[in-house]
Length: 254
Image 1 (cartoon, one colour):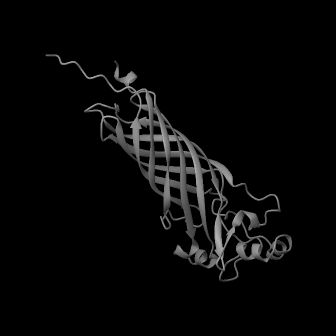
Image 2 (cartoon, helix red, strand yellow):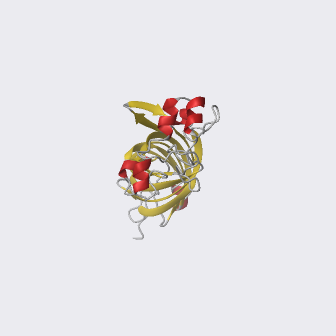
Image 3 (cartoon, helix red, strand yellow):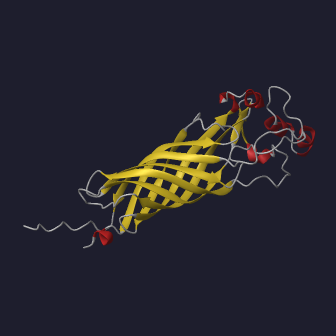
């Protein structure tokens, strides 16, 4: 049995770890509010180098201007939290030949790339009450024209996998999602007219839109940076079980 054919087959497992966000409320790549994350994974091995992996993932992300060292951002005083429900499909490339059941080729670093779709819903608290921000048009979106809580992104990442038994392996992986939305955190462009927002929505919408501790919320003032979309990231450890054919033992030359 060839080693290439021996590696064709499924791996199934799950992972646990953390998730974190970079965007308008965390633009310095600081991990300020990591959240719990995890998921279910299915991987199809084409051979010893290439695999296709599909995963269903959950993560919690959030950020607050109160954690920023920048005085403008502290004064802006915005914050959010969101649960993320993510489906990703990626191609993995192993740096080394990786053969389940081998005593020598049983570990490898790898790269991955692909795409994801995800559901999100940024929330915040005001006076002890939790609000779904997308329902309040905080940047002046017309009623019925709010951003959609479903989007997509490109996925890139890297990891390391190694066997811990004949058909079980551990994987450590970091993946980064380049999103097609800038509203994961409900912040993207400029402040709307607070009087118009109050008239078309209500006073709660205006209060959620402008929470600045100084007078920043004048119409047209910068609220976020629409030139850069948000991102979220997963870092975790997975346990995978291989269900394909294991390599036949080599016959001794003696």
